[in-house]
Amino acid sequence: MKEKIYTIPVNDAFDSGSECPICSMYWALENDAVEYAMGPSYMEDDIRAQTDELGFCEKHILQVYGEENRLGFALVMKTHIDRVISEIEKRASQPVKGKTLFGKVTPSTVSEYAGNLKTSCFVCRRIENTFQRYLDTILHLYKQDESFRQKYANCKGFCTSHYGMLMQLAPQKLSGAALDEFTALTSRLYLENMKRVRDDIEWFINKFDYKYANEPWKNAKDALQRSIVKVQSVDADAK
Image (cartoon, rainbow, N blue to C red; front, side, top):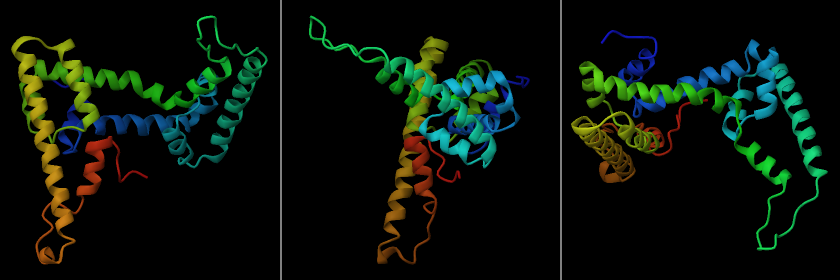
């Protein structure tokens, strides 16, 4: 199948040799979104309106800060905090409702707003739609492109989170024999490669035993970093 603009990142990720090609796609989107947040865009009114409203989640606020655009970060934080103060002032002026007749407690609008803001994030929102299209493209390519099916079958599996996403999405995009083949292959790739990393960790542990001191490291030297990808979808080498 001839490559199209939306298939290139997917093929590149499956060519990367990553412990989870879907993580690789996500990290690329994440880096782009973080750089965008602290690039010239932060001076645009429509983008500032979004960062003012959404803010950043715990993970991405540190990455945005890490871009070292101190003035840009200060401007974004100042207007976001202005927005939060305004919203809290409006909500705090409203009376807090106690228990209803049936014993239920209505959450205060302050606590509801604060809770939503904890997970609200400009970077996450910017990633979300494109990332979903990437997942859809994986299934589309698997269905239509023999060369991609071979590439998929030879990958190093997936992290637990993205394995679950693929298994959830598959019945929406595939059916019959294609669905059975895809889910069986995906589960095999996940389990075989999780066991491979597990075995590398076991050998890493063995190397701390004097009996194995003169044995080669095999593939164990970076086993811990790779296990973090598999278990929590996190790039341990990222700054």
